[in-house]
Length: 159
Image (cartoon, one colour):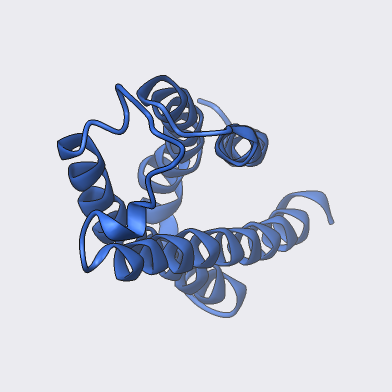
């Protein structure tokens, strides 16, 4: 049987690996002159891989053990993680509509840098706001949860 410390170390490594994937995915969008379907799907592959690296350890190992450890830093860690996922869902409510409108306008297959996407739909700016707030909030809460988790790891398995 694998020890808890080994499993915790593996979870830490996998969750840590998600940050460079998030940063690479963000860099793809930030460095793109325009967002074509190819750019978007490349970006989403990195983001999806980062989400898998975070979510699999959470669902497969951390969440089932939470009630056994609930208190202090464990509760804070869980709270921050839940806030991160809540903001991710908030971001998805914006991105789903943006994707739909941009696909209908054929801006992924035939990008037009002169098109102001705010003019494609009256709610576009609100959806883009949801996306920005959700993504920024997810990353802030993810980072806070990660740091608390790192402190917990050191307290439980290093000291």
